[in-house]
Every structure is written in structure tokens, then in C-alpha cells.
Length: 220
Image 1 (spheres, rainbow, N blue to C red):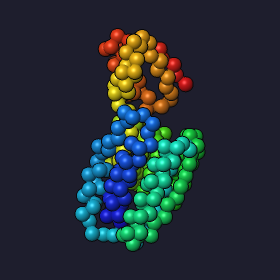
Image 2: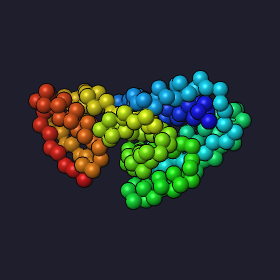
Image 3: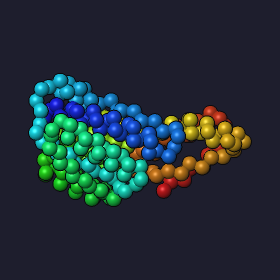
């Protein structure tokens, strides 16, 4: 069980890295694995010789969105391919929270009641909800598409690891100035209910302050 958990953990990280970069519409997006104890645990478990005959995974997608759909499909397809190659019977339960915190909480509770071997939340709110619901259970969680895992409280947890699709904000603004060097004021539109906004907006403000460019903030 430990071995297949480690293999699938590593697999999800790899697939999320590739798809996260390909699905992002911003050319400056970067995707890097978060550093958590779970990554070390997974690496050590990979050396174990114990193998599972079956493995169950719950994929919890925050909402329907082209990029998130692509990540989901790639993860699901690769999991099935790896399970077939290893001779493991794989059960995948798919959930979509439709961006509703209450629904995501119910989904997380259901997955835990079903005693799945791993939960894969896609996007930050889904990851936060799943991590909160799974506290104290030790259930392995591998998140994808989280821009700022540290701010979101997803790092430093023994049973949690995943990938970040953080924006390279300075590079994006460099591109803006390369197109129009005479920019005087920049509009910063973001959601103040999303932890993902915090780092990107702070980086944007710092950049614009250093360039002497004014900015106007609007939140939704």
C-alpha cells in the first residue's frame, strides 16, 4: 500500500506540473512542487516492497473550468495507465464542488467516509477544504493547481503535498511594458476572497512602485 501510494503521489506531481503549465493562458506561469514532509515520506515509501492489489482515489475538482478539466483528465488517464501497468485495481471517484464551500465540505466528508486511499483536490479552495476535513485522519492528499500553497496553509503537513501554478508576475508586467512602454496607470482586478490573489497582487504593487507607475485596485 505504501509503495503504490508513493508511486501515485509522484505521478500526480509530474502530471500536474506538465498540465498546469500547458493549461495556463498566461505565458509567464510557472509550476513548481511545494516542499512538504509528505514528499519525503513518499520518496521513502517508494523503497518499500509492499504492493497493493487495489487502490481508491477521490478527485475533488473545485469547479468546472477548462484548465482544471484538463488537469483532471490528465491525472485520471495517467493514474489508470499506471494502475494497469502495475496490475492494480484502481477505483476513481470524481467530484465537482461547483465552487461552493459547503458542497466541497460534504464531498470531502463523503470521500473520508468511503475510506479512500488518497484524495486529489484540484484548485486552492478544494485543497483547503479537503485538508481541513481530513485533519487527524492521515489520509494522503495531493493537491494540484494551487498558486500559493504556503499562504493557503497547505505546507508543512505530513500527509499533504502537491504542485503550485504560481504566476511569474514581474515577467507578465515586463511584457506589458514591452508592448506599451508609456503605461501610466495599471488596473489591478482581483478576488479578495482568494488566497491566491495575495502574493500576485503584492508582487504587482512592488513592481509598479519600483517603476513609478500608478495603479488602481478593484476587488470582486
